[in-house]
Structures are given as C-alpha cells and as structure tokens.
Length: 296
Image (cartoon, rainbow, N blue to C red; front, side, top):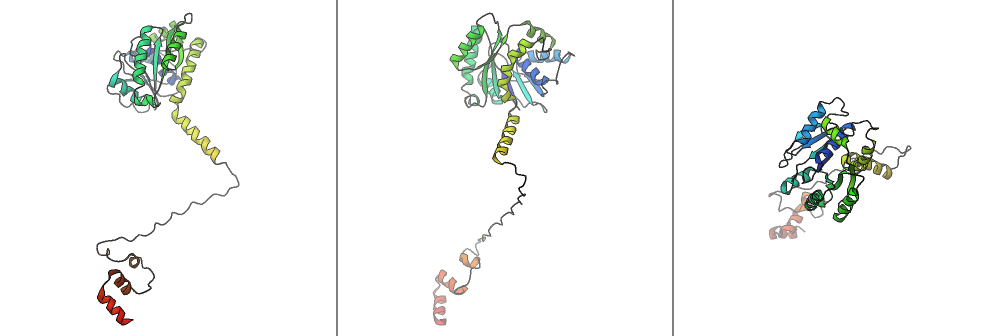
C-alpha cells in the first residue's frame, strides 16, 4: 500500500493543507484513503470532522487515524492509500520511523528564508537514511502560497537546484484554500469551473505521485506486456501436454550393518566373479583367498 508523508520541521509551512488535499484527491478518484494525523495538534483530524458534517463532500469517506510518530503502526484494514500529516520538528529516530513506512516524502516550502533553511536541514538528514539514499523512498519539494506577482517561484527553484532537490509543483496564494479548510473541503471537491487554475497547478504534482500511488498496477501491466511480447499468440498451435515428473534416482541407504559392503553389491550389479570372490578381493581375507585358489 502506498504511503506518502508530508514533512517539514517548521510549523505553518502548509503540511496540513497539502496532506488533506492529497487524501481528498484519493477519495474523489475512488481510492480508499486514510489520513494519518501524526501531528499532536490534530489539524488533520479537525478537518476530517468538518468534512464528515458537510453534505457537499465528493467521493469516498476518508478514514481518520491518529498516529504516534514514535510508533507508526499498520493502517486499518481496507485502506489502499495512506497520507501522513507529520508534526513540526520531526528529526532523528522519529523521522527515520516515518521514512521506514513511506514511499514518498513531500516537503512543503513557502517563500520564506526560515522555511527554506528548515527544509534544507530536513532534506540533508533525509538523504542519509537508507530508504532515501537507495531511491526506495522518493523526496520532492512543493512551493506553497507563492504569489505569482513576485519572484517567489524563481527563488524557490534556484534554491532547490543547489540542493539537488526536485520541485514538482507550486501552489498559489489564494483564499480558496482557506475557505475550503473551514468547511472540510478541498479544491478537488469544488466544481472544475471554480477551481480551474488551482487544479492545473496540482496536475504536475499528481503526475509525479502517480508511480507511487499505483505501483502494483504498473507492475502487473508491465509483466503482462513482457509476456505478450516474449510469447506471440498462435491459433494453430496444439496444446503441449505437461511433462511427467522425473522419478528420483534410488540411492542406497547406508547403515552400520551395510557400511562394510561394496556399493556394487548393494546395487545388485552384474555378477562377474561371484559374490564370495568380490567380497574376498575387497576385504583381503586370506582364508577365503586360499579356498578360492584351491577351488580354481
């Protein structure tokens, strides 16, 4: 099951806004989503309560789950996609435990020197963790509350390029996010005509997350294409009967009573000189050799 964690050590960077929208997108597209609230402030849980009371909500119900960052447990049964809203100041072992369960880490960063410094420190620590270093857990930044009239996006992308941190999208400063949060909604719950500009900004973010959200489906489709390309279909080909399993070769079992007997005797090899002669030759028993010499 794919798990996406929203992480930034600085409070007020937009973690809850990003996490609630990702969970709502999963819900409105028919996915069984869970919004894990790892933040002790409980912002995501508060949003879920308002969402449950709003009849304008679209899609499936989102499962709420309060988790402890020091003990991230298995999500409830029936959940297919997990989004974690993490607390500020997440570092050390608590950060490592979150990364152990996550397939992708999103760093929301606003147009602020303090946000960028906090995100840079967090990204430096993330790169040292094995799942991130090996590529099993992807990391990317998202610009939050950027004013299109300023050079906020340009500054953010230049800062991220110096760190080697990909920026997969930017979200504009608008009251639509504030009004939606007050009602337990997201821009994905609004009519497309009212949120066209915002939905367009979300598209590159969702495109980047698509391989994370649908790993099993992509693997199944890839295997099916590989099988089809490797074995072309033939209508005139007769079915090949299954091969009979080969009978295992019988190997004599040795015991203390048979350990002094030659192998060809135990295997009933063709008798060339008689059992007594072969035994005498193998054992070197001189009375038997004398008897055989008299007989021959």
